[in-house]
Image (cartoon, rainbow, N blue to C red):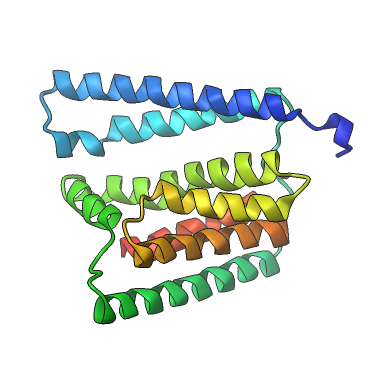
Length: 219
């Protein structure tokens, strides 16, 4: 696509702003729903309506993005080499993260990230099917469009390497690391996912790799 036919940076920013607004509005709707149903705080965190409203906010944003000529997906067939590359990169990232986790558990005061502890408490109150949908399907889809789609692929399209760095750091920050070990544990997959997009230029493959990572964690 010629540069003059690509959406302006301001267009990308306001479309992402629409997503944030929709997400906030739907979250308020979900909270009101739960309050009226008299659900407690942990039950309110992950529900069918909260997850589906979150997904709906992103799907509506994708429609608006398409209207504004912001294209995240090429819709061309991905050959097996692309899936193999994404799988290998993610497997290496998981192996590195496992090593960091092992060292942290045995040679420091680190136990688990606060994000993991909170998620375990939250998902204990959700069905396995809802947990699977949230962790393996919705979260990778939404997060990849935000960090590798809007941020790396669109805002930093002319400096993809810089987008790789920024998206990896923001992806890590979004998971709220509380120490150096947890920082590395979230930075490594962020770098891996950014690397997949940098090499393949296919957001579909980063979603696939993110889902694979989360599926292993879910099991």
